[in-house]
Structure formats: structure tokens, C-alpha cells
Length: 277
Image (cartoon, rainbow, N blue to C red; front, side):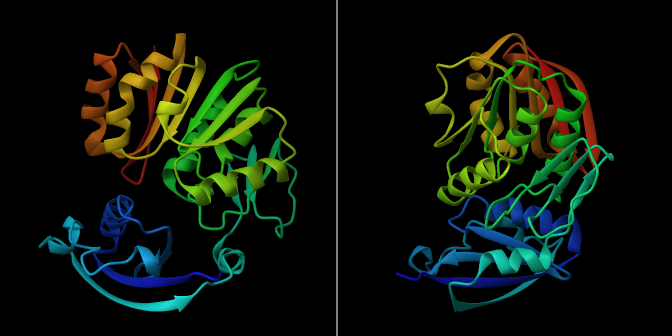
């Protein structure tokens, strides 16, 4: 049966960081996908998941620092692939890695990743994904066991295998992300990636040399003890999905679980950080 969606169009002023904050807060609700626009953000939720109070917990809508207007309407299920085709440009990461859609021309780079994002997060366009890709490019993953937690499109998992990882577990709690990751893993002919739907509770008994977690501050803090428990001795934890203003709290939590900050990257107030166990 075809699903109908409610489309919200948020017009945000000032555009940044208002749009990023709004996106982060909506991520805790049943909204399934987001498309950034010239004036703000479009957000989509299944009609059956919608209710009158869906925005009650979105704090930024009540903030005096931002002016946010929105409209919403019910739409029939759209061709998400076509929507992404209209909005998805290829990403070049330091001339070494290209993240592109199947319809983009192939370029001569060391790592060519084909992603069809559909409704999943993680194309390389967002600052956090871009910086995590940079960290992977800089890291020796040869024969390493890797966990990509909150994998989205599985782009980080795919690059990890291309960099020589022996085993990669890609995990996301969202059904769309799980299905999309499966498709992208097959599309890139990956053999060492296992995709799972779930959260850290499903892998907490395993051991990894490297954990990649590009999620959000609250989830990172919530699962920090589990990350440390899953890391091997001298294991590396790469974290992203939070702002520079959150870094001190992230560092404090990591240090409380035996993890030391080694390096950080900053892009438009977003942070990616490398910790060693």
C-alpha cells in the first residue's frame, strides 16, 4: 500500500545555525527525511505517525533568537530517488575520495563510492560526514575490525572496507537507513560489511579496533560506556554529530571512560574528534 506523507516547510532566519539546530531537534521525532532549502528545511513524516503535538518539544520554535515560520501539507509518496537526483551533487574529499550517485560521471580518484541516499543521512554533504571521511582517509584500517554506528547510507563503512578493513559492522536503528545501507553495500561490491538494524545493545559484546559514531551529542553521551567497552586496547573512537560548544562535555565523558582526545576537526561549528582508548 502506498504511504502518504506530511511535508513541513520551515523558513528559518537566521538561516544558520537555525537550520542545523532545527534539524538536530527534529531528529528526535518520527520525521524520516529532511531536505535543506534556500530558506530553511523541508521535513517529511508518515501521515500515520503525525499528531497535533508533533512539534511541541522542538525548543527552537519558541526561541527569541530565531524567526521560524512553517507550513505543512499532506502529499502522496514521492519518488525519493528523483528528489535526491535533483539535489545531490558529487562530493570530492581532498582529491582522494569521490562520493557520487550512480548517474554522476566517474572521476579518477583512489576511492570511488557510489551512494543512492534515498531518505538516509550521510552523503558527504554534511560537515560531520565529510570530516569523518577525512579521518578514515588518514587512518590505517588494514585488517582492522570496524563498527559504523548510526551508519545512515553506510558511506563510512564502505570507505572503511576500501581502506582495507577486515570486518565492518554497519548499524542503524532506522529501517530506511538499514535498507539503504544494504543497497549501497551491494552497489559498491563490498564483501566484508555486515549491516544490522538496531543500536549499541546489539553489538556491545563484540570488540572493535575502530568505532565510527556520527550521531548526535545526546546519543554519544548515552552510549559512551558501551563504546569504551567494545574497543580493543589502543582502539580508536571517532565521534561526530555535535557542535564545538559541546566538545568539552564530550571530552569529559570520554575521559571518564578511559578515552583521550588525540585530534579534532572543525567545519562550520561542527566537530569531529579522534579519541584513543
